[in-house]
Length: 483
Image (cartoon, rainbow, N blue to C red; front, side, top):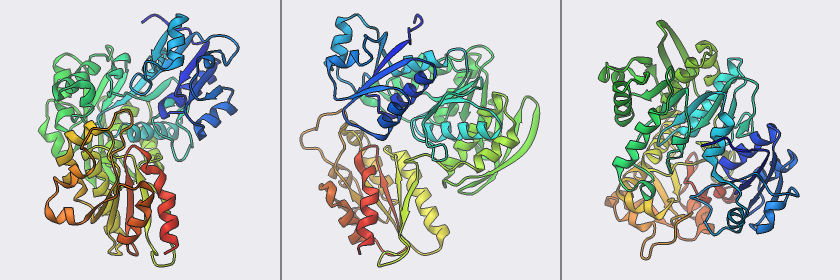
């Protein structure tokens, strides 16, 4: 693709997690930035204070918010319909229309690109890499699909050479990048509404590995069979591949050099034998976010950041100081008194069965560590009709890990409702015991009351999903506080 003129950039859906970060970087690069979104939000307000001109609502006239037409229009083809009036006018005016991945690729040009890919864990691992690099004295540029708790932002234009970003596979947009270091955390069928088959989904990661230039590195999680297999195939094609994971996983793949072997760990602590460039050393980190998946993500970030030249010891210190990302096992609040004393409410973005399993496992470990005998009460909102239909059985098994479940209706997002399909197709796949512990709650605003009927002192309440379920945390705390 020829170089894109970024002097005047207009972003449709500018308040979204991905778009707002790119807008921030473009502003810092000196571009005139305009945009539109369906509603006002904190990201929109923040961008306005930085100099962006943003309209609420979509309209043809929005392309002239800066007084002249933009040099490029940025959109998400999955989220923005083709008949959007701003897209229509862009076509009439012969203004180039690109995807956000195209803009990100252009912004990363000339930097050392560290990209994090995988079905699950991209945002957490990317965030860990950023925090670790900062602790090691680096000032990387970054764009993250979530807001760092410590920094309070999802993007930054750094003074250093490294640019850290997520590589989103959902629409194959990761094939726009040329990473110097790429991490694949795991590979599991998803986004089948786009890819059609699991085989096509797997293939996009192979193609991503082939985008790594000579001298670059692919880093794969050896605890994930598909990620490891992708690494083996890439190595056979001549790509430099490193692995990370537990000692047992490393022994299963002797043909992949193990850069980081976790020799001891629990839900938050890890001792890692790091071997890169013929140098071996032991580093340790203790995370504030529980779960074996987080321990593994941190190991992947450690390897990747070492490969771009950072000191492993300081990276480990940064991982220990990592305070998390919004909507990744994020503590919303805890009740200190009243009928529900000791109840903690968390929120998580988990929207795939594997993610739900990992988060509920971490929740159970958190309750066990507290030693108060509390239960895990999950409030789950399925995301997309296609995903819910495809994985209903797996969702049923994953949600069975909770002691009680409040199941909201499906959040369709970009999809139209499917006649006769609602969240009860998950309950239909549960065994009788799990089904008896699950309450179908089609009334969204009633969910906090339903949760109050199930919760007891010392319980952990967890809202999960990629949709509006995140809005319930404060209402749940308020409802329980009145009990």
